[in-house]
Image (cartoon, rainbow, N blue to C red; front, side):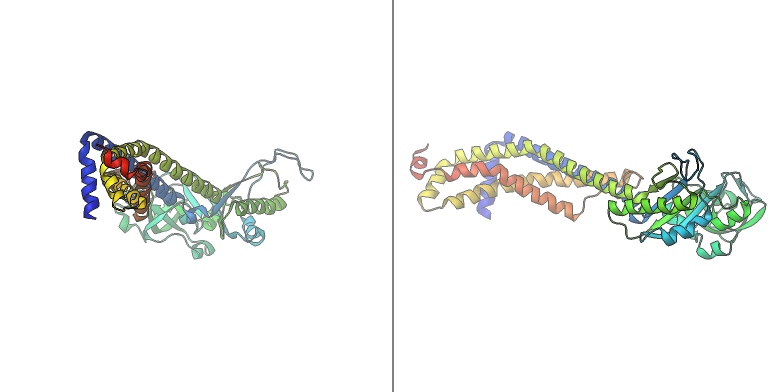
Length: 406
């Protein structure tokens, strides 16, 4: 090991300018690779945070306009979904349907207290809306099944709205607000960066509006989803059940609109894998100049040590030992400069994490131990590649000619 370290120092000291430029090229390539991998991981984490498996296991369905004549009905007929569509969808929608909920909003409703009021209406939804809308309950609870069954007059407020109405969001739970001429109990306060919805049980809102069961949107909870084929099965099943209930052709795409979030989740997974591959390609191409530089250094080192190599060969050193020595020097030089780039790359990713690493588009852009292992493997392979041809040249040195070399 000491001999190897001495040989490396000797190689580096022969041409300090070339060594410095080569070291900068290797360090820069690894630095860019680490930063790009960190940014890629941050983008992936943000995507998973915003649209992870749990949030993506939903399909939204809403009515549209028929584009085909069917069973005596002309095209252009309005299809409005009803609350009594929920049970058939759950029962006959297939093995991937776990639950169906409905939503509706009353935009004209005003939520108020003696202190202040908020506009924007009230939104009737089921318990699954907390997951689908990425609502994080801060105090109290969200709407539950018992609220739905008993048609309770309860609401869940956004934190800013709770502060506006009560002065302190902590004091909001258990207090009452006025809405639609009735008194409602605040059962929860939630956090969300951009949502300002006031949630209430769907069944309660439906009862108070008296709109004969028409809903705005159906939210379907999915289960056991894994492939694109499952997405197609769910979409076809939903259209099939609703086409029988509302008399439209099951291949009429405009009659009902289905947004299957799991399809987007699969597409995001493919996009993230492509992005990761592109990052590695860019990083390796950036390393190419460093590879050439290290290879040139090793060629010079072999040429300057031709006499020494000849002596080693003359006293019995095998070509394999010469090959291993040159490769080891090349790998060591590459790794030494490469880890300088790793260090500064990690510093930059930590800065990114502290400054913009908790946003909606970039979340925790750090490199983990898996990336460190991958980069180490890359450094070893790059160093071996850079030293391979100089090493092959060294093994072809003939002892007699080398001993005569001055």
